[in-house]
Structures are given as C-alpha cells and as structure tokens.
View 1 (cartoon, one colour):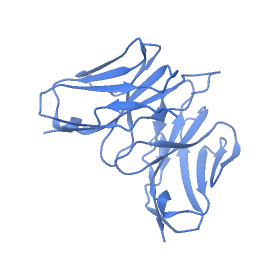
View 2 (tube, chains in turn green, orange; view 1 turned 90 degrees about the horizontal axis):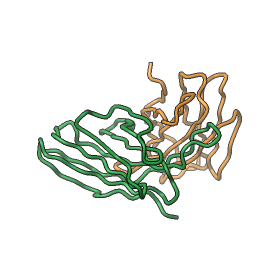
View 3 (cartoon, one colour; view 1 turned 90 degrees about the vertical axis):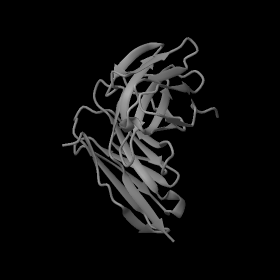
View 4 (spheres, chains in turn red, purple; view 1 turned 135 degrees about the vertical axis):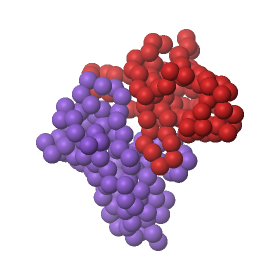
Length: 116
Length: 111
C-alpha cells in the first residue's frame, strides 16, 4: 500500500539559511500533520491542514510556515535556521475526522535536518 | 503533570515473554487512543488504535483501555528481539484531532 512520502530524507543547512520540506500524503487522505522530534523526545505537533486550510496550530515557531496545495501535498518552510532546529521532521496524513472520532495518523519516514 | 505519561524504561523482557506497556492520561474526555512503535531514527509505526473500553487484539498485540481509570496498556505476547523499540502512546483529547504523545517506553527483548 502507498505510504506517506517525504523529501528530502536528509538535509544539512547552515545557521540562518532556509529549508523546505515536502510531504506527499497517502492517496485520498485529506489531512496532513507536521511534527518535530528531537533526540529522545516525543513528537511535537507543529501544524496541520485539512482540505488545504490550516486546521490546527501547535508549537510552530514564527520562522516556520507551511501550506497544503491543491494536490494535498504539503510543504514546511523554515527560515533563519537555528542550531536548535536540528531534529527529525515527520509528516503524517489521515482521512481527517469521521463521526467525531479522530482518524488514525500514518507517519512518513521523516526528514532529518541538521543545522550547522 | 504531563498529559500523557509513560514509564521511560527501559523495560527488559526475555524472548518469548509477555511485555506489558502502560500509559496514563489526564483528560477524562479523551476518546481516541493509539500505540505506535518507533525504532531509533525511524518514524512512528501504528500498532493499534482503540476507542472503547476493554481489550482489542491483533496478532501478538492486545490493547487494553480503561477510561474510568484513565489508562491504556499494550501487551505483547511471545516477545521477539525485533520488538525492541520505543513504544509511544498517543491520546486525542476531547474535541481535538491532534494526538498528544507520551515520551515513550523503551522495550528491550533479549534472547
């Protein structure tokens, strides 16, 4: 079965540079979530999109922005990168909510961002 | 108090034994509960979802939910070394479609 696709898988940037991470959800999934996971930490929710509109916002820094496009893929744009932004960034997708019960999220393989 | 609590472990069990992983949550209105397995440096992989009180079995895995006591557990029967990973409990608070993750429990299954 098709899974969530993320690109690139690895990214190395210098401080103050910008980075763009891409996420392609499972076909027919309409909701995309972005998470940041530091070493030994649980995934921290950043932002989500449902039907191309921002649906929830978590601990996303103002230096980051994201959007979901007409084909449901999403991009996370990160500017003025800091050393502390080094982490695994996961995208997850789901069919969204049905009957008031959250649908299961399926995670992509992640992008490992290293800021030097 | 963190909203979703897990013992960080490591929990060490011998091969073939039952591993029991526990998770408690603070929001009494939570409705959706998930267990993910995560190998080091890899993405979380869904193992089980559970929404109603009681047990739910899938192969060697059994999820148990007790909303009155606000805990959800995962039992792994016939544990294998390949089960060694971090197990994340995720809970959706009432009215939210965003899961809150616990810190995860590290499981080590030794031959």
